[in-house]
Image 1 (cartoon, one colour):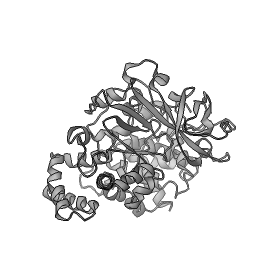
Image 2 (image 1 turned 180 degrees about the vertical axis):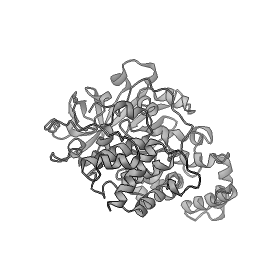
Image 3 (image 1 turned 135 degrees about the vertical axis):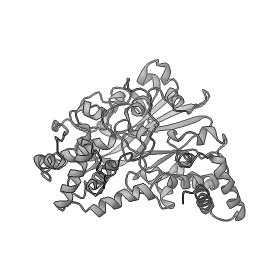
Image 4 (image 1 turned 30 degrees about the vertical axis):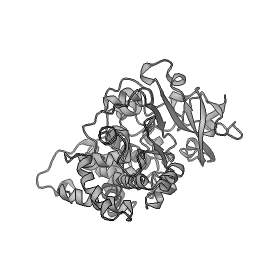
Length: 209
Length: 245
């Protein structure tokens, strides 16, 4: 989905804040982290893809105005309610206030294409599919439609677009690390001069260029 | 947790939510509190950038290991006993005078936990994730890391999660990196394993040279010893000197 989480190349977020480079700033962040790690054991998430998508489905304003482990907590609570582990009213009564959940899934069945590259190889020129899936994907917007070169191929792994939505079948595909030259991504932007960007993309995200 | 306090404090809404959910899940038997405590403790105490520092230290003194590390990162890192969650497939890049590597996850916060621990706030927040792919040289400079114009920058967006990249400076094998000091060790935001290690130590207000005073004698005391062991002993002395242990 073209959600708020897909941040690559966006503008307007200001300087990096280095004042807190610790991992956990608040005690509750530790609990949120621990609960997310335990989500698989609890039967709340069947994959990391499912966890990630539960976070991506957050309201955009809520996402941008909250700390990272509140994202995890929101996704986790959403999945707990969705899987019937916890009743929302019961949780809100216990928390003493409303609990914002992520939005419902809007994945469209069949929107993840079959791979068209028969045998991707290092050195191949490829174009990233120009598409806008409504469900989970690990294909960032800033490279869609762009042409690059495969520089590394990693072993087959579950296609996250399918894995995140349990009702659909899963399949594995090699992950191609594609190198994009800065001019291809950003035109003549002076801030980008000289910096190629490499993105790891499942084979079905790519087409022959 | 909050009820135990003699002086109750204000509980933020998100804190109340997290604690309520934890309590409910524990009560319903989905998870045990001691298991959560163990997860958290492991990442607070055992899994962190010092692991990555040990990997880099080995690469400095063992050329064959360095080659294995660059070619098969996950396996070479496993030789030192590190691996696991978010480290299924780790790739190591070497920064040199010619190229400076920088890592990001624009979609979430993928990070090589086994060698660097959990990512700091800035790595997970919008400014870094949005800007580093578009204007890396400018952003790194803002963050205090001036990459010379003659050095190329290569950005790695570890969007596939399991292909996270550990970016380390292994140049100058057997000695501190050729640009001792500023570039390597004053820049924890570069995502370098050793840089992060030293950044932690620098919170105490001391720099790399202070650590090297301990490291060099340890190496000289027994040149045949594993560099990893010497590094660990030096770190023990160093942290003891700082009153951290």
